[in-house]
Length: 44
Image (tube, rainbow, N blue to C red; front, side, top):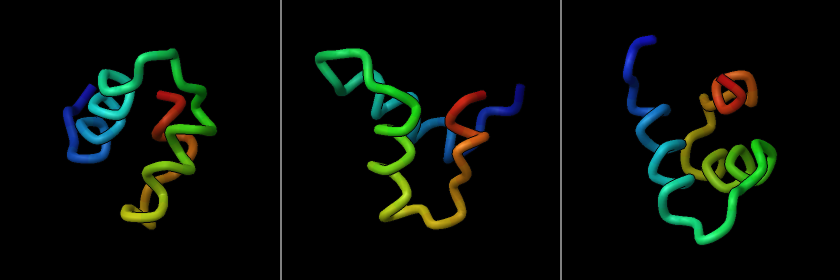
């Protein structure tokens, strides 16, 4: 699996949360600043 900027953002979001975030939470959090992010990318 190729490491991309989007995957880096997703990983950082997971690591910087004290609880396990849902895919929907990650998507909604990152979508504001990254409009090209898809929910499918978050699930992968």
